[in-house]
Image (cartoon, rainbow, N blue to C red; front, side, top):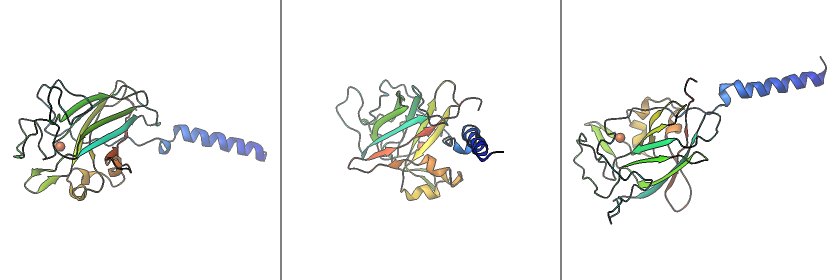
Amino acid sequence: MKRRDFIKRGLVGGALGLISGTSYAARPTPAEIEGPFYPVYAQKDKDFDLTRIQGQAGVARGKIIIIQGRVLDREGKPVEDATVDLWQANAAGRYRHPHDPNKAPLDPNFQGWAIVPSGKDGGFRFKTVYPGTYPASDSWMRPPHIHFKISKRGYVELVTQMYFPGEALNDVDLLLRRKRIDERPLMIATRLRGEAEIYQYDVVLEKAGE
Ligand SMILES: [Fe+2]
């Protein structure tokens, strides 16, 4: 075989490897349990701003933050018009849910739940408050987290939880700790530099039947 042909074949092989090899594809965001507090009360206002409720003058208590991210497929292509459904505890660690046993106060101005579509670039963005910690049992304190349910026809529905960087409770959380070491970073948002509290959280969906 001529050297030139050899190189050509090598390149072709490499390119095919790139297309078919899973090591080049983005890893899907790990799933996590939905937990017991998926919202059950009917709620009209489910927009991207969780710090205010339509028709009310007040603002939610706590540190206001922005979460932004993109919904991607395993090739890194944006997934447009995915349904990004998220819910979380308020700044005191309380869910607006009849079965939440936490005695921490409800916040009448905290929306707590949002359903937003991803845009053309797969992007989503919402404004909320930094979620509080809460006891899941006598000996288990949940780290701050946001629950997500992300769906789009043709993809496997992703139910997961997003964590915050630098939280000591992350290391001892009974759920997050069960994940492999290399999976955990996929579930922890990245804090962007700058004055505002902006967190980046990209999620990767698997195609149905993959
Ligand atoms: Fe939770």
